[in-house]
Length: 79
Image 1 (tube, rainbow, N blue to C red):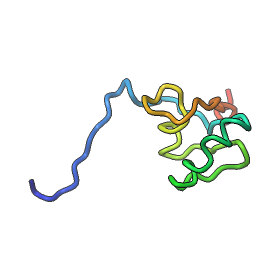
Image 2 (image 1 turned 45 degrees about the horizontal axis):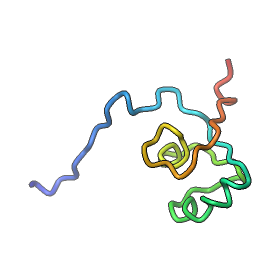
Image 3 (image 1 turned 90 degrees about the vertical axis):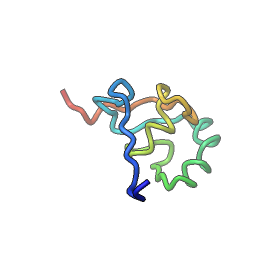
Image 4 (image 1 turned 60 degrees about the vertical axis):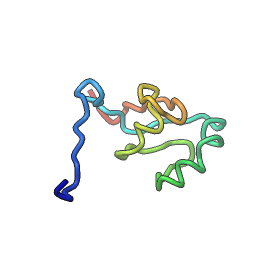
């Protein structure tokens, strides 16, 4: 116990390799989770939630404890 911060490395299978630009929520989903998003400091653009580090944990259906399953927005990837 050196007092140094502990670094927990995720299993590579748990990392989103090609993350979306953000997540789209329905009006109903947004109404249900807007307070929780605000508590976590997550800013939204209406029902659109731009990607930040915490957002996939809260809105991606693959996350074990997501609040709701938002629709991933992949339009920023081009291609």
